[in-house]
Image 1 (cartoon, one colour):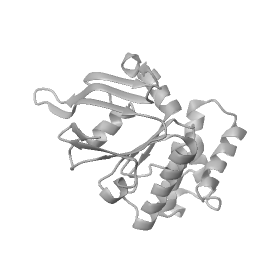
Image 2 (spheres, rainbow, N blue to C red; image 1 turned 90 degrees about the vertical axis):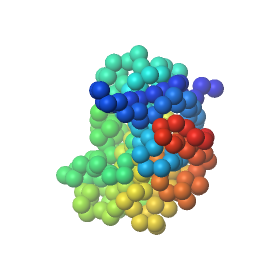
Image 3 (cartoon, one colour; image 1 turned 180 degrees about the vertical axis):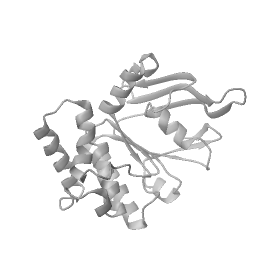
Image 4 (cartoon, helix red, strand yellow; image 1 turned 30 degrees about the vertical axis):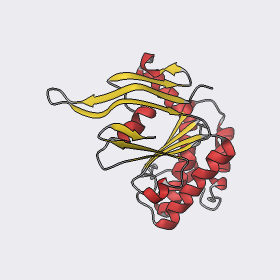
Length: 225
């Protein structure tokens, strides 16, 4: 079976004149039903690797394959559609729109994709929020929610278009230990119950140890996977 995402000999550099290599010569497969953590020292290229997996950045060299399609052959509009349809993102900061309710925030990716009616979008958003224990928070704006609740809304939003892969960049970085545990439990249930893949960047080795696979990156290269 083809991996959901495959990086083949991927390198990313930035800068003119003085060139900085963020990741170098990376080979990596992400398959359905796995929960992986990207770990490594600060500045080692963890987030850069995640952004390449999520088509947020393009490689300088090498190929990124999404479900057997080479994303390097797509223009930016097609890449953006692929991100919206097949990938979900959760970041350290929730990036919820402050003037929108939790329900409206979760509906935003569905509106952007444009496949569902308003009624179907609201029904799915409501179902996601209820499944994450937020049934009493649907009509509250982010400023009325706790940090843990806001991150759960962000997770629901990331799942709105039923992505095959959820990519999370330090998703517990601003949370207390109880909320961090809750996020990890949600991720574990998603992998076990839906067969999605989750790839999470984290500096917390205790959290990383609770995933199925630890991908260690050092100086832009995979040291262990």
